[in-house]
Length: 114
Image 1 (cartoon, rainbow, N blue to C red):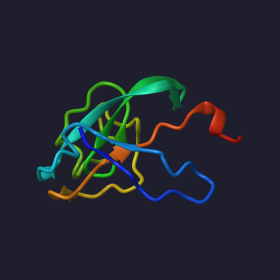
Image 2 (cartoon, one colour):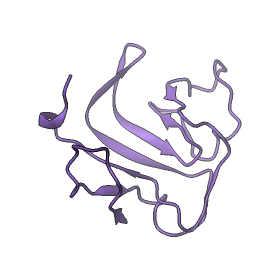
Image 3 (cartoon, one colour):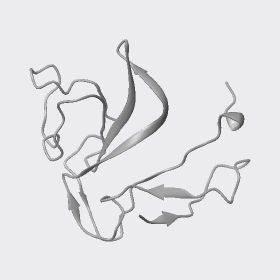
Image 4 (cartoon, rainbow, N blue to C red):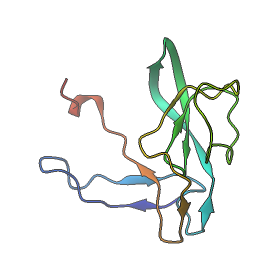
C-alpha cells in the first residue's frame, strides 16, 4: 500500500499523509476495481448506518451488501440490484493508469470544525 504526500488547503497540517487503497494504488492498471474501506465511524445514509464502504475506481462510494466490483461502470439507479446506497461524485467508466493513486486522509475529530 502506497503512502503519498499531497498539497493541502492552507491551514492544514502539511505533514499529513494520504493512505493509498490496496489494489487501487500499487502501480498497476486498474479497470473496474474497488477496495473495501472500514470507516472509523458509522456513516448514516438513507436511514441506515454503515461501517464499511467500497471505493470504486469508477468514482463511486458504495455502501452495504450486494455490490460486486466491476459491475458499476454502467449501472442504473433505482433498479432491483441492491446497490442503490451509493454516493457518486465522479461516476464514469474510468481506467486507473500505472501512476494513479486512489487514496484517503483520516482527519482526527479534534481538527473538524462544525
